[in-house]
Length: 447
Image 1 (cartoon, helix red, strand yellow):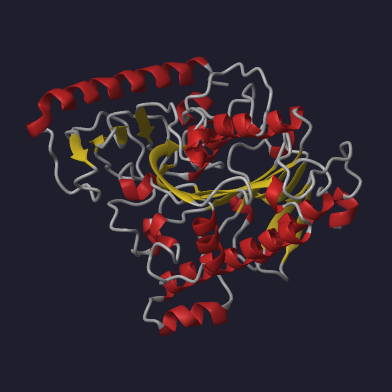
Image 2 (image 1 turned 135 degrees about the vertical axis):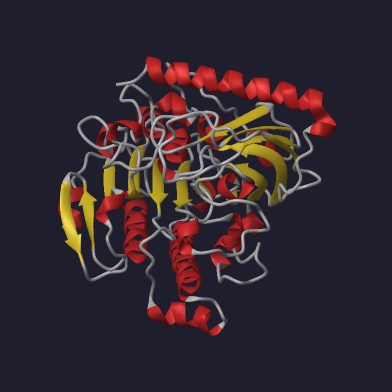
């Protein structure tokens, strides 16, 4: 079935760079986990989880200690990653594709990362989750991807029994574990297109609900004293890590590892509905603009071209597209200016001209900017507190904003607004101005 659907897709002119050379257009593999927290990697949690391949990537690539998603939930975060724009400007502001189809899709006139790679001669593929719109004009094959082997969130009732969309056909799968299946399909994409420049977006579902993993892997974590939910989540991450390791091995076997940029990150923090687990002492979870909801693991690796390093500068999902355009020599006239900037100098230990102010806001349904919004400026962070992730926000929140100094208080435990009143007032005004600006753009571009 896979060969029938994919092997006859039109190819691109032959292309290959020799080992050790930098291609004008290096391959790119963008791997995004789902609901994986900063504290879920073994290298960060002192070996609680077994993630040897991600740990190796962390030690051999550039590890960004202060990387931020663009949202507290998946669909808006992914829209920002694919467009370089704040979620509100893309029109993709909430997460339920069935309940809010018009609020969980990117506006059809926007250019995506896949569009840009495709226009520059890359073959483009998405393996895994698509959560940025469905219906005519909003699905992967209409958003710049040549190949799609994946699913919408509601296609996966169980990790061992799910529906997969291969190009425009639906197939039912009940004889494989989803994460293994996606890993295999990603490897297949790379093998099919090894002689061309390619962009592969591998959007894993792990460790998102519904929880599921091979029982023997779960059992090892149960034996270590974790409850079943946590043990299953850690097993899901371990199985994903194994597949990433297999993918890296294939890049080396094909001798294209040095001409392939591999990025790993997660869309947001851990899901609170599955129970609490270690997350680097960060406050908050998925759904919340506190650090635990938006700080994510982020690794950039390219053997032979990027030296192992740690970067402490703040980066944001909206920076990824401008950075890839610079590093991959991509030419494209963007109709919509990215909200982020190129951070490629950080990959070589230099300073980058990045935005001073970073912004977030999320609630279910129509945005209510008095709820769950934040601005970061240097070590300072203003937070309009979170209320609830289930309810729609019919009226203005009465909770007072707070100010944190993340350098002294990374766990966001102490409000220092009274001691820094002038700064606090200035940052509140900036957050209000941003809120009005992105809401005007959202309403102006509503489809």
